[in-house]
Length: 188
Ligand code: AMP
Image (cartoon, rainbow, N blue to C red; front, side):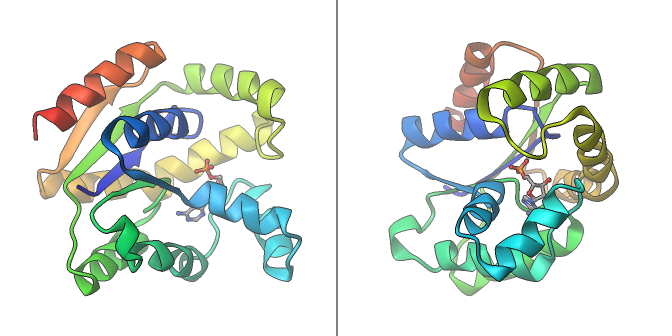
């Protein structure tokens, strides 16, 4: 099973992806984590990525598509991927479809965590204290939310048409959301 998880910044995509990965023996593929790794390694690409992330904008489609192909083409992860934070725009959704086709795979389920802006602001500020992420200030969080609404929401409409989309109330507790997601996956 390959799964896509959507949600605005601070919706809990990372937390829920880790839970699903453990419970169902899948691999969490977070483009945000891969990009942060690139920054940590202090490469030239990393410094360009850092600038974009700290503006709350999207890194180029080419960079992220190259990053994810390494995983889709890896037999160890075949039909075991959770795409966390990818695709983030229509071009990436088309790239993902093409890449999956190239390696004889498909998306089986798309989860959307639905959360209000008020909750997002609260969670991001909490996370800033715990993880000290450079893009977790209130100002950048609002920009990231706007980027999500402008570029990523249309992708959700795209998946709605293919009937793969399941919307989850992301306002609940981590445990409540865990249960809701598990029920959906087990029901496939
Ligand atoms: P995340 O950890 O998913 O919240 O991502 C943090 C930041 O990394 C985003 O605000 C973007 O700047 C960048 N990023 C993550 N995934 C993507 C993607 N699929 N396409 C473009 N930029 C991305």
